[in-house]
Amino acid sequence: MKGLALWFMVLGLISVSIGMGWGLYMAGTEDWLMAPAHAHLGLMGFVSFSIFAFYYHIVPGADVGALPKLHFLLSVLGLSIAIPGIVLSKLDATDALAAGGSFTFAVGMLCFLIVVLRGAHGR
Image 1: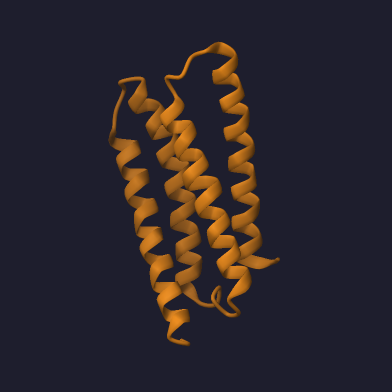
Image 2 (image 1 turned 90 degrees about the vertical axis):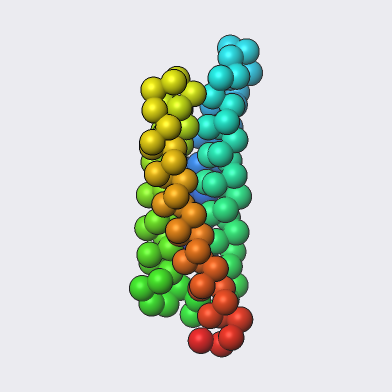
């Protein structure tokens, strides 16, 4: 594994490592307020990034061009904004960052959809 696939995999593993530590902390303190942020870190960071990594690794040439790089940028940026945003939302501070990060991640997912569809049609 190399290139974009490796980057997605490494960031996915970092996400799950942080998420597991966070989960252990919540279990130890019996304070589950941040469970939604913890769950989103696992789903967006580990599950999605791992799927992206495997796709880019398995499909030759899928990581070529500007669109896969934009997908990576939007996914990382979206995750980096959404998780702290969910924390702030749970603290009743603001929902704006959670919404903005989620939207950014969703646009990245649309980029991934186009990458996959292009690959399915041999482009």
